[in-house]
Image: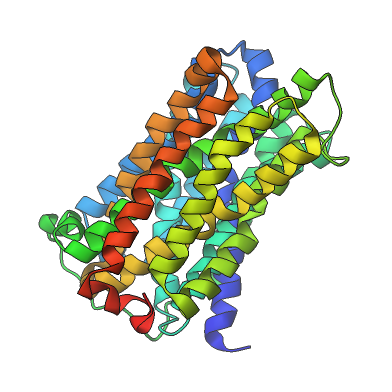
Amino acid sequence: MSAAWRQLVLLSLAELGALGLWFSANAVLPALSRDWQLGDGGRAGLTLAVQLGFIVGTLGGALANLPDVVPPRRVMVWSMLLGAGANAVVALWVDALGPALALRFVTGVAMAGAYPPAMKLMATWFREGRGLAIGILIGALTVGSASPYLIRGVTDLPWRGTLLAASVLAAAGAAVAHAFVTEGPHRFPPARFDLRMAAAVFRERGARLACYGYFGHMWELYAMWAWMGVFLAESLEARGGGSYAGLNAASATFAVIAAGAPGCWLGGLASDRWGRTTLTIAAMALSGACALLTGLTFGGPPLVTLALALLWGVTVVADSAQFSTAITELSAPAYVGTALTTQTCVGFALTLVTIWLVPPLVRLAGWPLAFAALALGPALGVAAMARLRSLPESAKLAGGRR
């Protein structure tokens, strides 16, 4: 195995461990709702607090050019340990929503230091095949995000035990990153602090359109991930019970979210071979169609619901890595980390809207309309990437493969 692929495996393992912190509270939401008597606002708040923390963390990192000034491995390790600690405090001592929201916010800040720097690190190891490499990394992040649902689905751990297991995995990820992860030979030039560079990604036409495509993708992605478990559980309940091909709702949710991992890998291969805009347009068209159709199966045959949800799980994140890869190809080399962090910050700000929006839409009109509203993002994303495809800047993508 080459050094680059060995680093890809190690960095993917580290990120897989760390990202379980993101949805650890979502995986135990039914138990938390019962123990803490949570309504829609409280349930959404546990996810929104992480998103908001991530936004604050990425914004601070972008304004300070942190990913380009401090070694990214150091940022990652300390961030993973901070997130593991905050999550463990919730598991061990918290008994009310207020302190949990504060600690979930801290977890989100920590994720801002664990996620974007990893993409920059991976880019230092790969020039050719960068789309596939970052696709594999995002696939590992996807499985990591789903891992609390697997813990919940196959064990009898109480909710505190599930949270603690996620913290242990994150600490293990930090240990792997500290001991084994290094920067590659294709390092980006060192950067000096420049406040203006946080917004520079929006001044270049090609990078700006890639960001718009990413924003459409993000409108859909995290709301789907955040509420899929609730949808699958309530769909079975509306039907009067049953299972998803023998899987309970938690295990089915893990399968749906984790299905994004092969989607990321296949998306990376397709993007490197046929082009970034080709892959992102196709993935967003399919995921938008799934958003329109999946809600219509609510309370219907579980196998139909699961099949559509799995397809949605594959396509909703298949393009995610390619927006990040496009930014590494279209941005000024010295500030790639800052450009990635700025793109990610704005994208996650949009997730606050859609994560909050789903519960009231479900109450007002049901799951079909709630999920259909998520299809607006992919539609706009397709338009942005089609525009980028028509411009000369797209020749910089994937060695000229648009």
